[in-house]
Image (cartoon, rainbow, N blue to C red; front, side):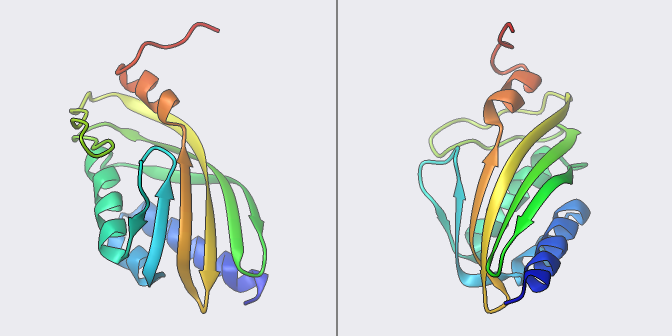
Amino acid sequence: MSVEEVKRIDEQGLAAWNSHNIDAFIALCADTIVWYDVNLPQPIKGKEGVRQYMQGWMTAFPDLKVRRKTTVAGEDTVAVELEFEGTHRGPLQGPPGMPAIQATGKRIKNQGAYFGRIRNGKIVEFSAHPDAAGLMMQLGVVPAMAR
């Protein structure tokens, strides 16, 4: 694939997140996608798992918006540094076995990064690295650390 094609798929994926169009994002994924989130003990496998992951974020932050800061793309890989913000209006599901964090009504602005691998025009692997500690501090779940 060309770097331009990788960037185009990434742009479509980011647009799907910002418009909360889960189906549009899922259409970019391979049936066998493997999704890693550094805050989860096991990878998510398959489109239905990705759908549930995205729905969790959209439920917790119905006004969620993502803004790219930096992008590095290659022939089958993209790496993005980003900021995301929204208002915590619904339950935020954490790792399996942990209770959901009920809506706080707090506005968050956080950061993270992701890495995607694309083959034959589809996302086959995705690795999300949101700043969970920063998010928990902004939600008031854990105390802010003194600097």
